[in-house]
Length: 393
Image (cartoon, rainbow, N blue to C red):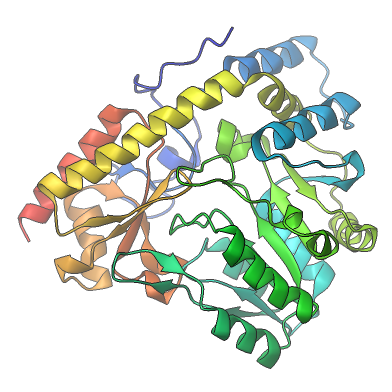
């Protein structure tokens, strides 16, 4: 029976070596800022995960690990139950993280100097793993309408694919930070363009379990033709708050693509996966459903709380309605502040550490990304701080 269903209690994380809280000084932040930036939760994990790790720790031998059949069954079972996606064990390549996998995709499917297509504003490591591997970033920048909803510019997408000789596209679905859950029609539109021009799609679906409007569509599973041109990046890390255990599951159906991808992993020297990560992932996907459902309901209530608070207390800041993820994209442009002044407001005056929108791309200026996966008391304190600071502007 699940024991960790208390999401209200504030758990002390200072002094635990966690990046979110203990990274303040290292990252140049004041000691008194409240951190709601990096995408990890302030909730205890499912008790099934704790019990699996406790049992493993009690054994007392922590040698090299090997993926077992029960692990594949748990991963495949989750994908089938949650996303109606039938997979095969030999499609799965374990890596220490999705960002690592994206870097391997860059090295496997492009050459130095090639361009890789992304859609800004987007998760900032997309850009860094491209540039740090000697490739160029090209953005098919998302378009925001008058209601604050983002969409893809398909004409620009295809024009850049052709002009820049694109061979690799990073898809973010659900999209971080703007919260879109792309529709079947949108995904098939970009998929057909990629297929027409022989573009490989690395689809980051790490937030697939956080969908509030509609349903998640696994890109690889939309059409038979997409199966042999797609690398699907998944992980239990966001869903079950186990990012520190460094385990991701990368699905590659095409044997040729899988061999090229594995070759790059081998070149890094990475071999056996993290034993604790394997145990946690298997326990989460096999026994963590009760915790997941309760956590998701709580996060949705937090999102509603932000929506209502902003409308009542800080109407100059609006929330881009999140269809997915537990990250909320705040539009602060009506405050009329420059990027530098906006950061002073949040960090220096409100004492809040959020993610500045500009790190996601130039079109993120005037925006801030906030992590809603925290106790309501933490969220309330953050919004009260922001309301007091904004009232002085």
